[in-house]
Image 1 (tube, helix red, strand yellow):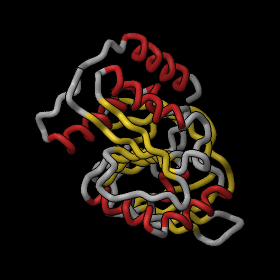
Image 2: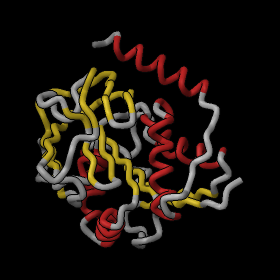
Image 3: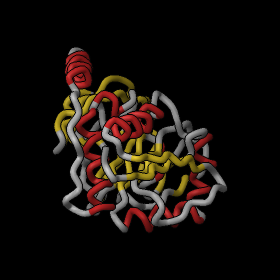
Length: 245
């Protein structure tokens, strides 16, 4: 057992939760519980109260354009303000697909006006003519990540944000520059569904460790787990992705 506790805020779970994204929250929760870390998962939807300073780790999944319209509007109010304050204070966040796009400056769909984001990432997204669908391998500072992309959005990064990774298999941010995802402070964005964290347990632990060190200081340690099965699953998923190259 540990004396640690973490609070995870799951943003818009009823609207932004496709292609297995809920598995990311379940993985964070379970890997904390296995270590005796007291973890609370709080679900925040449109109109719900969110107080800056209450969240250690955010998760924001993907959704269809019609759901993003509702979510983008809600983010222009107190919820978006609280998230931005927490991000400036180095709270941890994992955002996927639609959530990733709305952490940027805007998403420009075909059928409606631009959907404003909250500008955590210096990034912007436009709907493209075709969908990028298939397995993805991305090389990052935390090893090779494996996931599955299904998006028509093309995301481009400004000077204030660096890529989360580089594409080995798949299309990534835009199919042009070889980048996948975005990274600013402790906020991570990507197009990796599937879901990401069960397939990449080492990165899940990186997020948990970041949140613990922010809350408890640099001496906070994350007890190791026996990840033999998880490692085998990651290797198998990566090998399968390479076959689609």
